[in-house]
Image: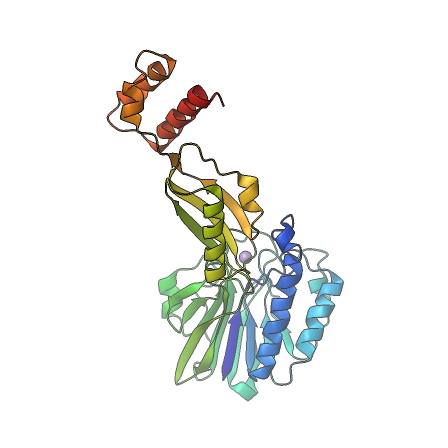
Length: 350
Ligand SMILES: [Mn+2]
C-alpha cells in the first residue's frame, strides 16, 4: 500500500511574524498542509499518517473544521492521527468531542490503541498526549496482535521528556514500520523501518535544513520509504567571507547573489567572516533590509597590522592599551574583539 508519513505541521504557529518579508508565514503553514492533502489525493495514497503536533497549540474549533474539510475530500486515503505534546488533549480540548469525517481515525487513547483496516490488511497502533510532557516510555514494549498483518506504530517523542524510546527495543518489535514525529530535524533512525518525519514546514528558526515528509510503499514483502522535500521556505545558513577589498555595497551584492542562487524565498542566518578594511563597518539595519535575513552576526575583524600599529604607538595611550594584549602569545576571539574595539575607540574616537 502507498503511505505518506508526515508530522509536526504546527498549524497555528506564526513564525517570523515581525519580519516584513514573512507576514504571512502562519498562513503558509496552512497552505503547505493544503498542498499535502492535494498531493495525497493526486497520488491516490492509501494511508496518510500524521505523527502528532498537527497543531502548534490547542486547536480552535474552526481550525478542526477546516482540517476536517480538507480530509473529507480524500477519495481513497485513510488518515490516521495522534495528538502530540503541542496539541495535547487538554481537559477542555475540542479534540475530545470533535466528530471527524469517515476518512479520519484519531487515536486518542493515552496508552496505545490499535485500529484495524481489514481491507488493507493493516493495523495501526498509537496514542495521544494528555499533557505537555510525558516521560513514559510507552513505545518500548508493544506486542503486535497479528504478525501476518502489516503493523505500523504511530508515535510522537524521542527526547527525555517526551515518550523516550529505546531504538534497540523498537528494532526488536514486530512492527513493519514505525512512523514517528516530534524531532523536527527528522531522519531515518533505521532505513525503511524507524523514521522521524521531521516538520513539514520549518516552524521556527531552529528548524534548519530540508523539510517535508516520507512517502513510499509498505507491504508484508517490504518497506520502501523516501524523503520528499515539500516545505515552501527553509532556514539556511549564509556565510559571507569578507576581504579588506570589500565595501558595504560589495557585501550586499554578494548576499543578494547567494540568495538568488540558494532560493530567494528561503530565510537566512547571515554570518560575516574574515577581514574588513579598517574604515568599513557593516550597518546591521541596512543589511537586514535586503530581506529574508532572520539573524546577522558580524565576526569580521579590521585589517590592522597589529605589530606595526603597536610599534608606532608605544609611547601613547593606544600603545599602553595594546601592550597588555600584545604580550600574550595567543588571543582568543573575545580578546581580539576587545582589542579591536579599543583600537577603534582610541583611533577614531568612536
Ligand atoms: Mn512535538
